Length: 179
Image (cartoon, rainbow, N blue to C red):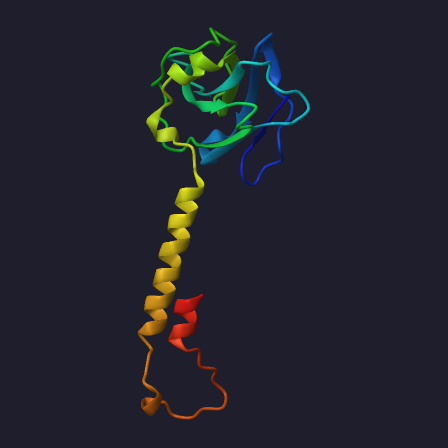
């Protein structure tokens, strides 16, 4: 029903079902993980009126498992990217997973709990796990292109200042602006 992806690793589709409406993925060596993608496989949709709350748990032998709400996925929004590198161990809130068997010291867990959509709308995810959006990519692209134009403009000369050089290609600044 669900998949979990960490950059540089194989896709995980082997979620352990710990209750009829709860699933858990193990993330070994979580210290090197920055972002986690949780998605629906497309084989089984959520039941009508429900979605999946996505939680993250650090292994903490002293405090037990501490779960943090990252966000949610639904049939209408079947995938999400969560930043986990900024989360703090030992800081958590209410969660539906109860006390589960402790994990190895370097294994974290991502949990998906099937809950009613109106209940999901009332929950507040951890602020540092902000879901990545296309807007951040658009902002990066715009800043990169502005930087390219500024860099290229720093070499600008007028046509009268140009010295003929058959081995160099000249690009008019107006063509970059039009693009």
